Image 1 (cartoon, chains in turn blue, purple):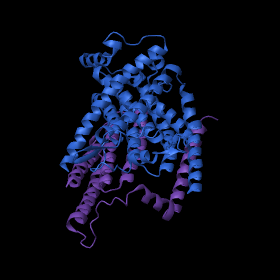
Image 2 (cartoon, helix red, strand yellow):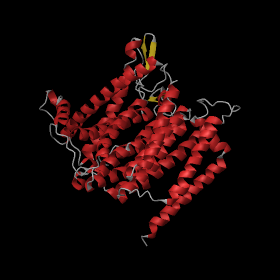
Image 3 (cartoon, rainbow over the protein chains, first blue to last red):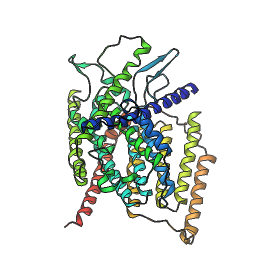
Image 4 (cartoon, each protein chain N blue to C red):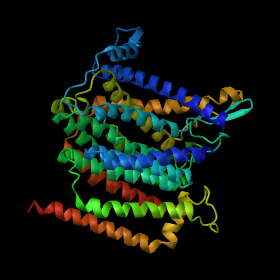
Length: 351
Length: 167
């Protein structure tokens, strides 16, 4: 029991640091890629290719004065960014990143919430993720309300309404995959995607569930408040939306939460639609080294999703608010329901 | 052992949240306390092996229902309540009935222990998604469908109320 807790604690510590490092360098990647898309260089001054820019940003966030405006409701004003960042980091605990790691006497999985033997997984992995996503609304809603500022309140109302609306199509788009996989455990879903169709095409759920994948992708952009759905922080209308009154590290927490959520969403897309850690090359390395190869495939697939996020940001303009709501409720939701009905009919026909 | 420790921690959090819900004078603090109560209830379900119920408790109650509560409080900008302390209903009906209820609960739980009933431990199979689905779409299909019709009527009522202002 004690070893299990210690191993889980070590895994959490490592994973949080990896995630936060990845978040910092995603910001760098985004500035660089968007820069090149707009015929600029992006960050170049700090370190080679601006590679030390995230560290400089971090130092700046810590050293800046942490202003608390006098008119805010202080307990919630402080609680809101913490809630955002804690929930954003919690969801990574459910995600399986690879197979088992053989460490002499112990075998453990690349996942915080794995069973002590390293082969099992919690049975409701996906539902836990949806639960954490649905709780994440509070960070933004409370931030806007406690700031006692009309722009913040408008931004947070927009964000909450948007997140609640798109959570439905997000959840329903996953049902198609669940029907095919027959399990809520993320590890089980990934294991079902091993192998190939006709020896060529990988057995990924993106091929039978193409529509679900696009619904998921669009809803995921809306869930993470990214362009083209970044109305909560539309700077031309709302100053900076729900984080108008936040400065220094509290602002950085919202920033980290947004990028960590991007990672979670990309991880779920990889796990459910793109075969998780399964790669095209068969095993040939010694077991201890081979255990780390799936991590590389997983990271590569997640990176592709992050790149698409940035690409979309460099390409698409922002929605209008009524368009956003009409698109979510009148197009994505019926489409997701139709997808579920057709998928379940086919699954029932084949079984 | 770990189950027992976790149970006492989250039971204490649950009760503290419930008391805080009553004690707070600002509606948004009360709503947040209610979320804490919902969350710790979910953990208690999880400790009993009802994984699916725990997850649904978080998604539906803490995630969806309470967001609407918070929404209403934010939109109406509800102010701080005042405690008058002069409610005769509370003094002469509320407090005696609470005392009776607590007394009954303590009596039935502590003093009057049912010896014949077997102790219920965590059972991984009873709370699984498959098990609940078999019950819901097999044995209890009719009540389930009737409930969904009921919810549909509520949705249609909401649409009618929202449309009334337009014409």
